[in-house]
Amino acid sequence: MNEYKQVRGQLIEMLEELGDRLVKITDEVKHPDEPLAKNFEEQASQVENDEVLDYLGNAARVEIEQIQQAIVRIDKGEYGFCATCGEAINPERLKAVPFTKLCIKCASQAGN
Image (tube, rainbow, N blue to C red):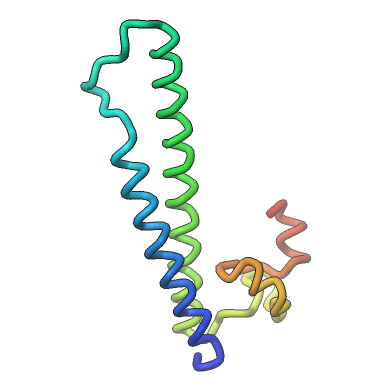
């Protein structure tokens, strides 16, 4: 675990940043009880904005879950090994995507 202590810290920082971003996104999403603008173009813009914010919020939630899982893998001593084939994940891949659970070969096969 000491080997990945710095990575764990980076993952926790990422979690905090994503959590802050998710709060901001959630605050920006229109509530269903608020009326849409009377102008059709403004309505379309409001709906489109809400859809984008919803997408960004969902993406942040997925990434938060992946980061939390990576922290658990570090704590269990399973971090750095592919969840599919069990081989070591290339350190360069871990630097690029520190929450990955798949080696590049398995990620490619899975379409990730």
